[in-house]
Length: 355
Ligand SMILES: [Zn+2]
Ligand SMILES: [Zn+2]
Image (cartoon, rainbow, N blue to C red):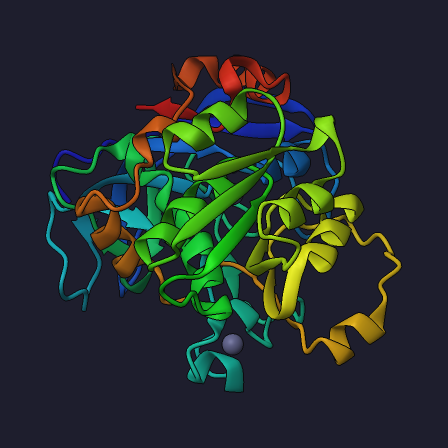
């Protein structure tokens, strides 16, 4: 390796809700791995929960720890046996590494790796259970890296991680040309999924939410808006579809109320993609409605096999992710960026740390 320092700056989670800028060793690369100089790393809602210690013991397994899983950068060095990448390539990284050998991994569903939670060290979620990218350098297996064209900035590259989740949801749900689609919850994932639905041929996309995010949804191409603070959202969606309901609903809010809206506003024979998490809350559901109206419900987790396609869609201008970067901070101000994100400043779709 040439020009690689032995030490780097990193934001280290020292204790719960205590993140410090420190000098730490640049990680070594092993066979099949790549050292990447981090260009930018986004701050996600999950980062706030990990930082607060809500998943302590497994995300992260122990402290100190380096978080950060939504990022892009430049290849700095290659381990033995890496093909398809060169020093200087611009890349973005998947964070979910399946064990590679279980039945789900071998069928391409590595987001559902059976090695998860079993202590199988081949299963890793970088930034959650293995070292993340709030640091000047990060190491990843080559197969988790995807090239970014020069026209996609590092800041935009940080949004591929969440955007690819939206794309996975689109594939799970199966958008058909001409569909009327509802997106509940215009946060980052909702605002990307909304654009993807149109790119896949939805004739009409209705976004359900409230506040300034609805204005952003309109700016990004939403055809109709339902303000959940100004009446019943199901009635709003039914009124916009002549009482029939929508063909497909993407639930991106993760609240019991939003899930109930999804279930009650989808048409007979419609589809629902559940993307948001409620934190293990129990919800009353009329199961007969699902049976008698043949409602298809799809759980959606992570973004298997979705990065290259999403990068192509961003490059082609089919999805605008640049508008979803709310503010950019230097690494030294990461604690301030986290606080601003928590307080939903500047719309706070995404705060990004730029190196
Ligand atoms: Zn995330
Ligand atoms: Zn596996």
